[in-house]
Length: 416
Image (cartoon, rainbow, N blue to C red; front, side, top):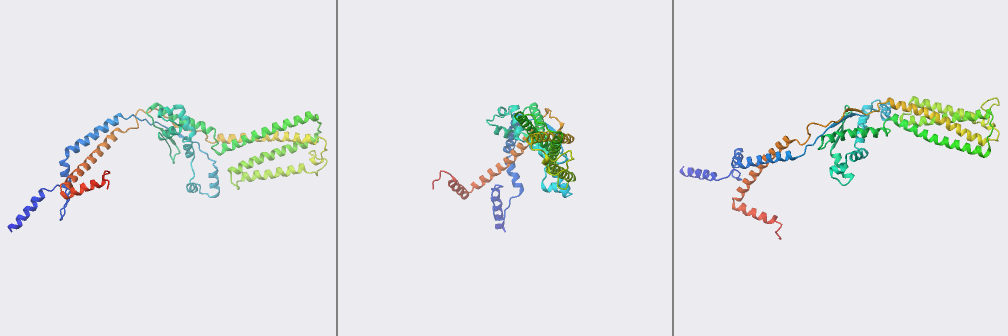
C-alpha cells in the first residue's frame, strides 16, 4: 500500500514539470484551461502587440487621403416599339418569359454600356486632364484607372442608372459624374437608339440619295437641251411623262416604306400587308401606262405610241419628274418618322445631379482600426502558442536533434 502511494506521488511530481502545450501520451489530454494558462503567461506581449496594431492602424488611417463619392441618377429613354418585343408578343404571347430566356437586355443596360464606352471615357480624361492627375503615361492605363474609380449600375426594377465617381477632390468628383451624364446625352443624340430614330435616319439617307439623283438628272437634261435645242413637247406627251414619273416615284417611295416596315414588323403585320397590296396596285398601273396597247382617246397615251422624235428628251424629262416627285414623297415620310420619334420618350431624364459631398466615402477609419486590432490580437495569440509549442518541442533532446536535422536539410547552404 505504501508502494502504491509512493508511485502516485512520483507521477504527480512529474506532471508538475509538464508545460501545458507539451504533447502527452498514455491517455493524458490537454483541456481548454491549458490554453488560458499560455495566454496568461504571455499576457503582456499580447496586450502590447494588440495595442501597437491599433495605434499603427489609427495613424495610417489618419494619413490616408479622403476619398469622396458623389452620385448622379438618371432615367434612360424607353422605347415602346422595339423590334424584339413586337416579335415576341406577336408570335408567343409571353414576352416576359421569352425575354428572360433569351437574355433580352433593357434600355438601361444599353445606356450603361454607352457610359462605359471608350468615346465617353476619353472625353472625361481629356476634360479633367486625368493622365496628369493619375500620373499615367498612356491613355490605356489612364482609362483603366478611371474605370476603377467609377461605378455605373442600373436598377433592374426601376431602370434608374446611378453614376458614382471616386476622387480625392469632392467638387471634381461631382463635376466628373455630371460630365458623364452630359456626354451621354450628346452621344445618344447622334445615335439611332430607338426604332423611330432608325426609321428617321433611314429616310434621311434616302432623301440625300434622291437629291443627288435629282441634281444629276436636271444637269443631264440641261446639257441635252443645250446640245439639241429646246424641244417642243405636246400636252399629250407631257401627260404621259408626268403620269409615268408620278407613279414610278410612288412605287419607289412605297418600296422604301415596305423595306422599313419589314425591318421592324412581322410578316403578319396588317399595316405591312396593306402597304404591299398598295405597291402591287401601283405596279399594275405603271404597266398599263407603259404597254404599247391603248386607246387613242386616252389622254395618258402609252409610251409605245409616242413618235420617235424627241424620245431621248422625254426620257430625260421623265427622270427629272421621277426624282422630283420621289423627293417630295420621301420628305413627307421623313417628317412622319421624325414626328414618331418625337412621340417616344427620347430624352434622358436627370433625377439627381451630383453635388460635392460633405463627408468622405473612404477610408472607413473606425473599421480599419477595429479590423487591425482584431487581427493583431489573433496573430498575437497564434504567435505565443507557436513559441510555447516550439519551446516544449526543443526541451526534449530527441526532438531537438530532429529539429536540427530538419533545419540542415531545408537549408539552401546544404550541398548534399
